[in-house]
Length: 208
Image (cartoon, rainbow, N blue to C red; front, side):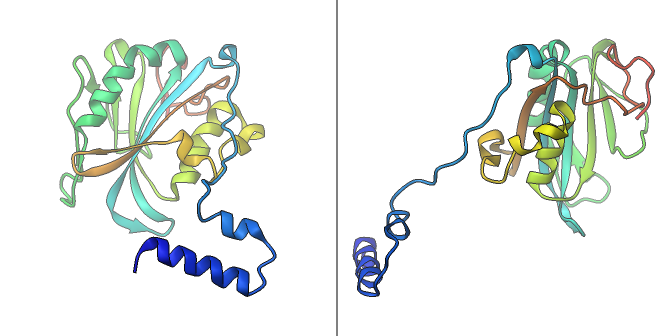
């Protein structure tokens, strides 16, 4: 039975049953219309977050557990280290080994920092310019991605990221046998404000 035969049979069934909604038929062949992705003027993009999710090997109460890798700070600083972040992500390997559930290769000049609350690891750029925070998170892809966007753009713009346009904003690719979900957001708010362990030129007091 061919796909064309099945489609024709479905159309006949719908019309002979008195279908009064042609849209219910057309949707079989027409692409889904997604709301456009909203953007903001360049002058409002003072800060930037590069982040990625890689699935772990356990399931928590809030859904799949993710390894989270996040680099945030002033756009000029993050731009300097974007290539390092991407090289780092390409090296990440997650496993079921409880002794080493995740591993990576540090970019040249980067160092591993001390222990931090709520983090698996902190990786520090040359001269402490910025940090990659490595942590675990539960919840859905949408919940995590929308949270990062709100940190940069404010609660008033939370509806810029919706389930309908989520995968217009998320880059999907395979890394070392696991899928990786990656975002690149920019906005007017410092995403590290209120996280006192974050040291760097935009948050010199240190803290989380």
